[in-house]
Image (cartoon, rainbow, N blue to C red):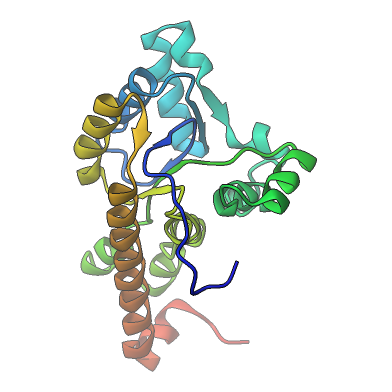
Length: 228
């Protein structure tokens, strides 16, 4: 399709497959319960500590809610590796995030590899700026640089024609209110608004990291690392 043609986009997209992987776990229980109640048949794919918390939360809600939860490693077929550093950097996840509705080649790729099209990503980033403000040293700050979260948010935001990118717990109330009002569907206007917020967040996050890298002094580096 030529880029200058007007493209038809579905306004209300059903939320059926969700990724939840957050460092900020505020209101996570409310979000999970809300997704299960508002979105018929939803499947929530999650990782690490987020998965553990969701499992205990949804178990309380009953067997049907508990069945909605999927361990991301079970979906991808790959265990979490390198101490949890590598858990959402998997091609099967990005097939599902970047698949465009109505694209036969994309849909064939999903079917060929047993992948699902993800409709919503909920991700919060490692708290780099908070660690910086606390006076953390160079090595601790380096460990607070998030890779998977920004990648997923960027992929979801790019494909906002179909996918929602939720980047903050502050967005949960409006998100759940819309899903309840629409029978588990997310509007184009909301997807576009969420995409803009996600790109803005990632840009600010990367800028904070770049600024810290540029301002570090030789003495800071010497205090953290011994050069061989």
